[in-house]
Image (cartoon, rainbow, N blue to C red):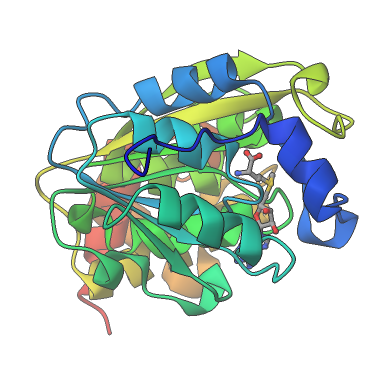
Length: 277
Ligand code: SAM
């Protein structure tokens, strides 16, 4: 009868029907296993009433899991026109719940796409994942949560503690704006085609208080200088920003190195740096 709902074919079949072969230049590694996709979507829970933005849905495995959750809407930003017909079919299957934005996510203001409360949940293209994250951190207060699959090393750099080898600019910027933790890890074989390295999901829950744009820029200058020469003592790596005077004002010893500073100590430096311009 006309009321019989059509079933979505398994994702592997959809890929074959549409002849969608992964393109390396677009960082394409697809998740075809529904249970893995549901575990990632679950890291956003509770999703009831939330508007989810997904970056790079590709053939739509994670998109399907998000649509099967109780999220209010899913808005998926995909640059690859070969995936658009697949996503249009999926949207027809979930009337009023899936919007496809056929654009480069780096050129889109993701927070402006949907009303609050909003989350980003995505298996990111690895080549542009970090610049995308930094853009979202600039407006972290717009997001209730960000659930982001990266290559494992990037997820570790987001969540790293001071004094560890992965601690750097990305850890300071991320943890200054959000509580960060690794939500799950996946081996290469979970993806089609498998990437060379392990992957991990970083979960970021933005703090209630967020830095102003001016303060964020000051933190970018401080961390770029401090970690640009991470082996040097801060009194020399921060010379162009006031060196020992800045450090004294912040109550930080000039002979310390960037990787030993806590996020709170970096925040003191950024606050002083921000007042200078
Ligand atoms: N979400 C799908 C999955 O989990 O199977 C695909 C993930 S794949 C790692 C990354 C996706 O991001 C691809 O579909 C790719 O085409 C898309 N992509 C790459 N660069 C993009 C950009 N600048 N803007 C939007 N999407 C992009």
